Amino acid sequence: MRSDFLVQWIYSCAVGLLIGWVAWGPGRMPLLSMVMPLIMAIATCRRQAFLVATAYGFATQRELLQFTVESTSWSAPAPLAAWIVAPVIGGIAWSLYWTRSSKPWAKALACLVGWLAVLFPPAGEMVWGSSLAGWGYVVPGFGWGGVLLSALVPAIVMVEVTVKQESRQHTRIWVAAVGLVLTVMSFAPRTVETRIVQDIVGASTDWKTESPIRFVEQHLPRVSNTARQLAAEKLARVLIYPAGVVQMVPGEDMQTLMTTMLTLSRETEMTIVLGAVVIAQDTNGGPAHQAIAFYPNGKSVVTQGGLLASPYGALLPAHSVQTLQIRDGLQAQLIPGNPHAFLFSMLVSTWLSPAPLVIAMLDHNSNAVIRAQIQGLTSLFGQKLVIAGTAHSRLGNAPD
Image (cartoon, one colour):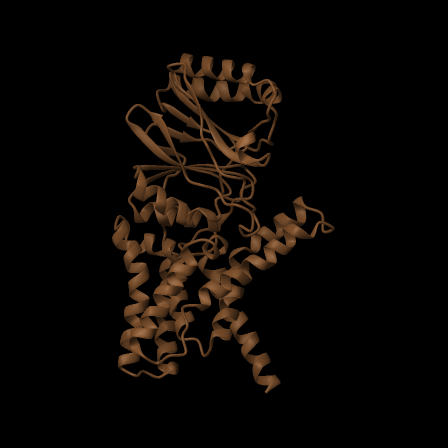
């Protein structure tokens, strides 16, 4: 009995790790993630579904372990604990796709409950590698119809399987076959320009977060040169920089930064947006990823963001998707920082204030999984995407 449990444990973890590793990585589309709901639903028991999903979660968050080791002390247990706990919570959410009942309506209901748990807070904030992103690559531009398909297709399939009384072995074979086809398709060449879109440029830097004064001293000349070159060549009207290039603290002198950036924006007739880590009273003293936009008409806007999300699985409050006017007549959804749990907030933002453009201002924690999720969801809703990232974000962008 103990031997059977060990075999099932090893087998389940191996399947989850394999799917997570293959589905999410540089140079491929996360199409294989679309079979995760079915794999959960046809599991032998809820324990097996949980083991597969938890291993899947660890595989999708694999790069964050390296970040945890490099940027924190092992004597500080909270970040590492969060990295460990998040896939476990995600595994519980995924396992709700499974039900013991053999009734078709119960199978369909379990799929819908699992879909809600994986996507919606609070558990949804801890799930990396949502299958919803995969649907964006398969049915681009379907919008809310694609969201509905991601919920209904697994439910319909399980009803069909249950009505026909297909054996679990036969079902697993064809699910594996579908997974193999999706894996092959995921490596198909797909080039999407995300740094220069229309008249908007997303810069890539290797800068560390600096105070306003240090930013003016260290980085303003490079910002000025880039902006003036783009303006002279008439290549862009908007220049976006990554998250966290400047830090704003209450009581610190911001006047020099604001004045020089507004002057630069006016002289180049360009909108320039800087990613900022803001410490303000409205975040209870905690840091927030926000953006500072400087406009040619002499105005500036600081977006209102949520608390800085934890890069270890969203055990801390998550980012909110913000809306920003980029230039006259153009609104954009703004994803600041390390948006591991942005899917739900982006769906809400799309429902309340849809925009044709999404700007992702990423930080050094961002990786291929985050980029694939952003591209998948923007593709689903037919939105243009501009990414401004750091040289350490593993996105493949060279610093400007």
